[in-house]
Image (cartoon, rainbow, N blue to C red; front, side, top):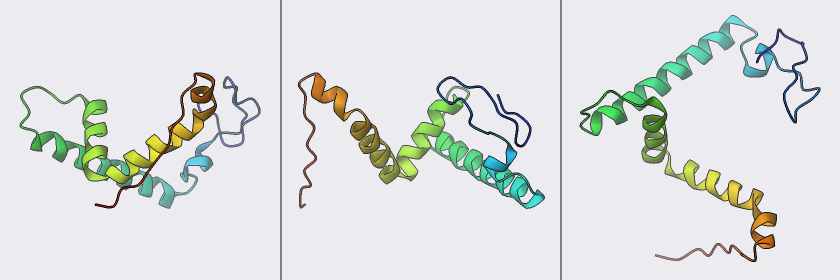
Length: 106
């Protein structure tokens, strides 16, 4: 739940964190315009990916947005995967697993 600018919001694990519109760059009219344009671009790209897959059913926007991310920015998907693996490294080691990333020259 977002509070007013400068208001402290209680979130589990994030006590004392100040959340407001200023955190999202929307404290000015220009910031709101930027957010609207980015949201519109995101919607259009996701919709185009949905239309390119020969749709038979109405879109499931979460699934379509993930597909758009995979098709349009695969390097971001790989980076997010590597960050998650690094974050879970201690858990993997406690389970007796090791993860090694080796780059192959193709």
